[in-house]
Amino acid sequence: MNRDPIERPGLGITHHLWSDAKSAILDHIGTFTPVHVVTITPEMCLRAHRDEKFAGIISNAGIVVPDGVGVVWGETRLTGKKVEKIPGIDLASWAIDEVIGNKGRIFLLGSKPDLVEKAAVEIGKKYPGTDSIKWRDGYFDTAETNRVVDEIAAHEPHVLLVGMGSPKQEEFIAHNLDRLKCAVAIGVGGSFDIWSGLIKRAPEFFQATGTEWLYRTFTQPSARLKRIPELWRFTGLVFKIGRSRKLISH
Image (cartoon, rainbow, N blue to C red):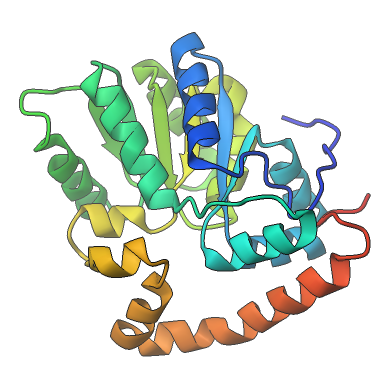
Protein backbone atom coordinates (compact mmCIF):
# COMPACT_ATOMS: atom_id res chain seq x y z
CA MET A 1 0.00 0.00 0.00
CA ASN A 2 1.42 3.40 -0.96
CA ARG A 3 0.47 6.48 0.98
CA ASP A 4 2.14 9.79 1.63
CA PRO A 5 4.36 9.46 4.72
CA ILE A 6 2.97 10.92 7.92
CA GLU A 7 5.37 13.25 9.68
CA ARG A 8 5.59 12.68 13.43
CA PRO A 9 7.80 14.34 16.04
CA GLY A 10 10.74 12.60 17.64
CA LEU A 11 11.37 9.05 16.49
CA GLY A 12 7.91 8.59 15.05
CA ILE A 13 6.38 6.89 18.10
CA THR A 14 2.57 7.01 18.06
CA HIS A 15 1.82 5.43 21.46
CA HIS A 16 4.19 6.17 24.32
CA LEU A 17 2.43 4.28 27.11
CA TRP A 18 1.44 0.65 27.56
CA SER A 19 -2.15 1.60 28.32
CA ASP A 20 -2.48 3.62 25.12
CA ALA A 21 -0.95 0.90 22.94
CA LYS A 22 -3.18 -1.79 24.42
CA SER A 23 -6.29 0.34 24.02
CA ALA A 24 -5.49 1.06 20.36
CA ILE A 25 -4.86 -2.61 19.58
CA LEU A 26 -8.06 -3.69 21.29
CA ASP A 27 -9.99 -1.12 19.25
CA HIS A 28 -8.64 -2.61 16.02
CA ILE A 29 -9.34 -6.16 17.17
CA GLY A 30 -12.86 -5.22 18.19
CA THR A 31 -13.69 -3.51 14.90
CA PHE A 32 -11.50 -5.84 12.82
CA THR A 33 -9.89 -2.82 11.19
CA PRO A 34 -6.39 -3.60 9.81
CA VAL A 35 -3.45 -1.89 11.47
CA HIS A 36 0.31 -2.32 11.18
CA VAL A 37 2.08 -2.34 14.55
CA VAL A 38 5.81 -1.54 14.60
CA THR A 39 7.91 -2.13 17.71
CA ILE A 40 10.77 0.14 16.76
CA THR A 41 14.40 -0.44 17.78
CA PRO A 42 17.50 1.76 17.47
CA GLU A 43 18.59 -0.19 14.38
CA MET A 44 15.22 0.42 12.75
CA CYS A 45 15.49 4.14 13.51
CA LEU A 46 18.86 4.22 11.79
CA ARG A 47 17.49 2.39 8.76
CA ALA A 48 14.53 4.79 8.55
CA HIS A 49 16.94 7.73 8.59
CA ARG A 50 18.92 6.46 5.60
CA ASP A 51 16.25 4.49 3.68
CA GLU A 52 13.34 6.56 2.39
CA LYS A 53 11.17 3.53 1.55
CA PHE A 54 11.58 2.06 5.00
CA ALA A 55 10.94 5.49 6.50
CA GLY A 56 7.65 5.57 4.62
CA ILE A 57 6.66 2.19 6.04
CA ILE A 58 7.32 3.35 9.60
CA SER A 59 5.56 6.66 9.00
CA ASN A 60 2.45 4.94 7.66
CA ALA A 61 2.21 2.30 10.40
CA GLY A 62 -0.84 2.98 12.53
CA ILE A 63 0.82 2.01 15.81
CA VAL A 64 4.54 2.53 16.53
CA VAL A 65 5.86 1.77 20.02
CA PRO A 66 9.33 2.01 21.61
CA ASP A 67 11.02 -1.39 21.90
CA GLY A 68 13.94 -1.00 24.28
CA VAL A 69 15.59 1.48 26.60
CA GLY A 70 17.54 3.17 23.79
CA VAL A 71 14.41 4.22 21.94
CA VAL A 72 12.78 5.28 25.22
CA TRP A 73 15.77 7.51 25.94
CA GLY A 74 15.82 8.98 22.43
CA GLU A 75 12.09 9.65 22.27
CA THR A 76 12.07 11.21 25.73
CA ARG A 77 14.98 13.47 24.84
CA LEU A 78 13.42 14.59 21.57
CA THR A 79 9.82 15.08 22.68
CA GLY A 80 9.97 15.59 26.44
CA LYS A 81 7.08 13.13 26.84
CA LYS A 82 6.75 10.29 29.32
CA VAL A 83 7.73 7.14 27.45
CA GLU A 84 7.43 3.53 28.59
CA LYS A 85 9.43 0.64 27.15
CA ILE A 86 7.09 -1.67 25.25
CA PRO A 87 9.08 -4.76 24.19
CA GLY A 88 7.71 -6.39 21.07
CA ILE A 89 7.60 -9.86 22.61
CA ASP A 90 5.65 -8.57 25.62
CA LEU A 91 3.16 -6.72 23.44
CA ALA A 92 2.70 -9.75 21.19
CA SER A 93 2.35 -12.11 24.17
CA TRP A 94 -0.32 -9.86 25.66
CA ALA A 95 -2.16 -9.75 22.31
CA ILE A 96 -2.08 -13.55 22.08
CA ASP A 97 -3.59 -13.88 25.55
CA GLU A 98 -6.30 -11.34 24.72
CA VAL A 99 -7.24 -12.92 21.41
CA ILE A 100 -7.12 -16.64 22.19
CA GLY A 101 -8.62 -16.07 25.62
CA ASN A 102 -11.61 -14.57 23.83
CA LYS A 103 -11.86 -17.31 21.18
CA GLY A 104 -10.11 -15.27 18.53
CA ARG A 105 -7.63 -16.38 15.85
CA ILE A 106 -3.83 -16.08 15.63
CA PHE A 107 -1.46 -16.67 12.72
CA LEU A 108 2.31 -17.06 13.09
CA LEU A 109 4.44 -16.40 10.01
CA GLY A 110 8.21 -16.75 9.93
CA SER A 111 11.28 -18.70 10.95
CA LYS A 112 11.98 -22.35 10.03
CA PRO A 113 9.11 -24.83 9.72
CA ASP A 114 9.98 -26.87 12.81
CA LEU A 115 10.67 -23.83 14.94
CA VAL A 116 7.49 -21.87 14.14
CA GLU A 117 5.46 -25.06 14.64
CA LYS A 118 7.10 -25.59 18.03
CA ALA A 119 6.31 -21.98 18.95
CA ALA A 120 2.66 -22.51 18.00
CA VAL A 121 2.51 -25.74 20.00
CA GLU A 122 4.02 -24.10 23.09
CA ILE A 123 1.61 -21.18 22.85
CA GLY A 124 -1.28 -23.59 22.38
CA LYS A 125 -0.41 -25.46 25.58
CA LYS A 126 -1.80 -22.50 27.51
CA TYR A 127 -5.14 -23.04 25.79
CA PRO A 128 -5.88 -26.80 25.64
CA GLY A 129 -8.17 -27.76 22.82
CA THR A 130 -7.79 -24.54 20.87
CA ASP A 131 -7.56 -24.77 17.09
CA SER A 132 -7.35 -21.03 16.57
CA ILE A 133 -3.57 -20.91 15.97
CA LYS A 134 -2.26 -21.41 12.44
CA TRP A 135 1.30 -21.05 11.21
CA ARG A 136 3.71 -21.35 8.34
CA ASP A 137 7.43 -20.77 7.93
CA GLY A 138 9.00 -17.65 6.50
CA TYR A 139 11.01 -19.38 3.78
CA PHE A 140 9.23 -18.38 0.59
CA ASP A 141 10.30 -16.34 -2.41
CA THR A 142 8.59 -13.38 -4.01
CA ALA A 143 6.71 -15.57 -6.47
CA GLU A 144 5.00 -17.34 -3.57
CA THR A 145 3.92 -14.20 -1.73
CA ASN A 146 0.38 -14.17 -3.09
CA ARG A 147 -0.14 -17.79 -2.04
CA VAL A 148 1.12 -17.01 1.47
CA VAL A 149 -1.12 -13.96 1.71
CA ASP A 150 -4.11 -16.07 0.61
CA GLU A 151 -3.27 -18.70 3.24
CA ILE A 152 -3.25 -16.08 5.98
CA ALA A 153 -6.39 -14.36 4.68
CA ALA A 154 -8.27 -17.68 4.70
CA HIS A 155 -7.76 -17.87 8.48
CA GLU A 156 -8.84 -14.24 9.00
CA PRO A 157 -6.62 -13.81 12.07
CA HIS A 158 -7.37 -11.22 14.68
CA VAL A 159 -3.61 -10.98 15.20
CA LEU A 160 -0.90 -11.83 12.67
CA LEU A 161 2.62 -12.15 14.08
CA VAL A 162 5.40 -11.92 11.49
CA GLY A 163 8.85 -13.06 12.59
CA MET A 164 11.05 -12.63 9.52
CA GLY A 165 13.48 -10.03 10.83
CA SER A 166 13.57 -6.34 9.99
CA PRO A 167 13.07 -4.87 7.42
CA LYS A 168 11.59 -7.94 5.70
CA GLN A 169 8.72 -8.36 8.15
CA GLU A 170 7.76 -4.67 8.04
CA GLU A 171 7.90 -4.70 4.23
CA PHE A 172 5.70 -7.81 4.02
CA ILE A 173 3.06 -6.34 6.33
CA ALA A 174 3.05 -2.89 4.73
CA HIS A 175 2.81 -4.19 1.17
CA ASN A 176 0.07 -6.74 1.88
CA LEU A 177 -1.97 -5.36 4.80
CA ASP A 178 -5.08 -4.67 2.70
CA ARG A 179 -5.20 -8.30 1.52
CA LEU A 180 -4.23 -10.18 4.69
CA LYS A 181 -7.72 -9.96 6.25
CA CYS A 182 -6.30 -9.49 9.72
CA ALA A 183 -7.09 -6.93 12.39
CA VAL A 184 -3.59 -6.43 13.80
CA ALA A 185 -0.25 -7.29 12.18
CA ILE A 186 2.89 -7.09 14.32
CA GLY A 187 6.51 -7.67 13.33
CA VAL A 188 8.02 -9.76 16.15
CA GLY A 189 11.61 -10.39 15.04
CA GLY A 190 13.09 -13.38 16.87
CA SER A 191 10.20 -13.93 19.27
CA PHE A 192 9.46 -17.38 17.82
CA ASP A 193 12.89 -18.49 19.07
CA ILE A 194 11.83 -17.61 22.61
CA TRP A 195 8.28 -18.98 22.41
CA SER A 196 9.60 -22.26 21.02
CA GLY A 197 12.12 -22.57 23.85
CA LEU A 198 15.16 -22.37 21.56
CA ILE A 199 16.38 -19.24 23.37
CA LYS A 200 15.70 -18.40 26.99
CA ARG A 201 14.52 -14.94 27.85
CA ALA A 202 16.18 -12.89 30.57
CA PRO A 203 14.96 -13.59 34.13
CA GLU A 204 12.13 -11.40 35.41
CA PHE A 205 14.50 -9.22 37.45
CA PHE A 206 16.25 -8.03 34.29
CA GLN A 207 12.93 -7.55 32.48
CA ALA A 208 11.47 -5.50 35.34
CA THR A 209 14.52 -3.28 35.70
CA GLY A 210 14.98 -2.65 31.99
CA THR A 211 18.37 -4.36 31.95
CA GLU A 212 17.68 -7.26 29.59
CA TRP A 213 20.44 -5.85 27.42
CA LEU A 214 22.90 -6.50 30.27
CA TYR A 215 21.75 -10.09 30.66
CA ARG A 216 22.08 -10.69 26.92
CA THR A 217 25.54 -9.12 26.95
CA PHE A 218 26.66 -11.76 29.43
CA THR A 219 24.87 -14.68 27.75
CA GLN A 220 25.42 -13.69 24.10
CA PRO A 221 28.57 -11.53 24.21
CA SER A 222 29.57 -11.78 20.54
CA ALA A 223 26.11 -10.88 19.27
CA ARG A 224 25.75 -7.98 21.70
CA LEU A 225 29.19 -6.55 21.00
CA LYS A 226 28.31 -6.36 17.31
CA ARG A 227 25.46 -4.00 18.23
CA ILE A 228 27.66 -1.45 20.00
CA PRO A 229 28.65 0.53 16.87
CA GLU A 230 24.98 0.76 15.83
CA LEU A 231 23.95 1.94 19.28
CA TRP A 232 26.59 4.69 19.16
CA ARG A 233 25.31 5.70 15.71
CA PHE A 234 21.79 5.81 17.11
CA THR A 235 22.95 8.06 19.96
CA GLY A 236 24.57 10.36 17.44
CA LEU A 237 21.40 10.36 15.34
CA VAL A 238 19.28 11.44 18.30
CA PHE A 239 21.58 14.41 18.94
CA LYS A 240 21.68 15.21 15.22
CA ILE A 241 17.92 15.32 14.75
CA GLY A 242 17.30 17.13 18.02
CA ARG A 243 17.06 20.42 16.20
CA SER A 244 14.27 19.30 13.84
CA ARG A 245 12.46 17.17 16.43
CA LYS A 246 11.62 14.43 13.94
CA LEU A 247 13.32 11.32 12.64
CA ILE A 248 12.25 11.52 9.03
CA SER A 249 12.43 14.61 6.84
CA HIS A 250 10.82 14.58 3.40
